[in-house]
Image (tube, rainbow, N blue to C red; front, side, top):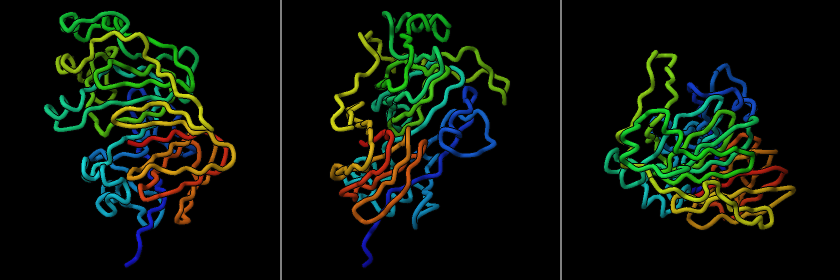
Length: 325
């Protein structure tokens, strides 16, 4: 029987044009396209209808779901197979906001399961680049009760209750399900989230969709029971200490995210029974594993390190966002 050898996997990016999208993602990724207003590049996705397609190796052309069906625990780890079946548990995106995104909130796993038979959406943002005066909306700046929220609904006065932060490259925002949030114009960022496309849009600046001529749907009533009404003292996440180029950004029950700063060659030993995802935000790298597979990862590209990899060597200079669950 031929032994299994899954290389680090690259995927075709899924580029999404949206009303608030900009023109930074294509040059950031080093690709040419006539597509305009690209607000999102879904880098690694198992969302039904938006499944990533393998771009390298002998399995090129297969979807991520088909890869899990084919390789199972060797690709994603046994505990993920037992918990999620053939669904990839994380969604990795690059987001470019030329305009303000809607103010929104996501349900937690329990509420999303009840209403949508889906996972909830806890997520995090790593700010890659910003325009001058770019902002992030995250959390509440003062008390907002469910009763007050119900009264003001989708009125712009809701913005008076939301904490606004001047955003800067390198900052991290952890967004547990239930936290009101919005990406302000001028932010380029990497997003790591649970595999879910459930969003409750609660304020959208009165914008009209160019295709339909109508305002976009709001979910004010649905969001009422999803919102965390707690006012927290701080909404910007403080990364952990830099330990030999590895810095913990977010550690939660849904994912673990690290920033890897590399100059030369580093060897990593992936945790047993778990995949890793690498998203290069600066520089260029050659990535090789213990089975002599090798790929090049350039700025703006992402790859999936299979769970079966026991060692991974990364050679080059730059910065990688490493996410796993």
